[in-house]
Image 1 (cartoon, rainbow, N blue to C red):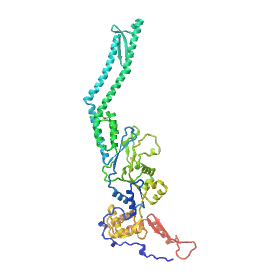
Image 2: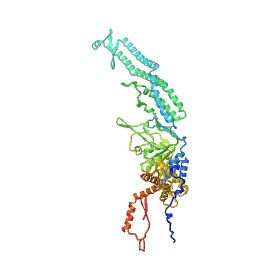
Image 3: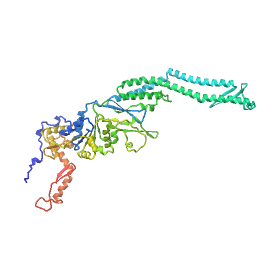
Image 4: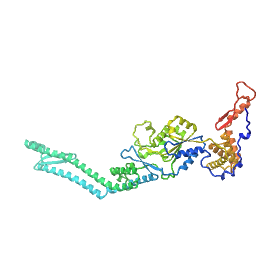
Length: 582
């Protein structure tokens, strides 16, 4: 077997500064996106373009390889279509307040609906008070009241006439009526009544009994019936005048939202509820308060909870959820304390990341997502059902039995982009059967790219981009060449450059520091090399001690002669980011 001897120049790549046609990176344009990665970028574009269910993306690769940068850049390229943007509002369900209704409106219309309903409430306060304080209303109501009084008065007058014809007088005391017999216009007392003939006593008792029965009929049947009739006529009068106050105001709103059937249905329900509770809008005078005001708590049910407002959105939503907890994804229902109890209503419903990203893209870190209890299952459930249900964990786990809200779920139309490491992708693919149904597109970022003149130029532009992004000193072309050499060293593969841009960004920051210590205006190659040496020195304790023990003979290694049962070998030891051979 022939042993090939490797020359030194093959063991270390040398990037010549003359290969670059600029003096400093200040002359270079920035680079949007990442260097290379054509396969991964193509996969991302494919996943974004397919609108079928299940074509969500998993972007896999090493942390720091530019996955987030690439995803952000490509999402911005797609982010110019507003046709899928909507506003979403929760409003009161007047039939079942525990099940708030969800309204969908074109972008910008949700804010308009909030303002329209607030203005409607203000106008109703004024209009209702004016209508029910009008002379016409008071006149017609007084007619009803007078008619009731006249009927009641007529009934008692007829009863009094009968009592006079039968020499009996009706006495009224607080809470009771009594009859007493008369003789010569005067009441007969009990002693005189006992002296009357038996037949006369029986006649008087019979007359009083008949009059008592007629009085009972008036008090227990006629007057209650007249009162019911009176209240029904007053109710009809109130409905008539309420319709006058409400009808034309709601008609204008219904005409404005006529192309949105669910909003029109809601406005019709508002109209009916306002009429049924019309006196909630009457201004109540309060002691010590100028003018008075309507009871705000009663009008809370007419507010609009603008859950998602896309009025100012310039394109499709792109949501990066850094802390993908269960409720951060699906939303939550807040509570407030009243009189020692926790209460809630539809105005306390809050959106989650799935709501905010609806119509666009949701970007999540896969490791953080899986580390949160129930978050992964909640995401899968939402993607399978294409709806997001707002439900607390306590309800999900059946830990509480109290009545809570059940908001109408929001229909989902979005792409989810998970960013994670390869091992995590392979484990999910192997162990979770539902994963492959939901994340059908994998974008695999390579750890290295080809070492070519074109990639050298792109690398220089990446350096210029990082310098501007972090506010560092610009690099000379010699310093850029040193950075490219370090990228080749990190790749640990002949003919390749590392794509681990986090390491390059750290190197640039440290080289900038060393350039600053010598008062330089730009970073030179010596600053880059000093930064590399300093990185090694900070992590070199283990290697130094190991080499010292070998030199001192504490670790004995024989490299000459023959020994039975002993094999010498070469090993690479990793101590964090530092690797060295033994």
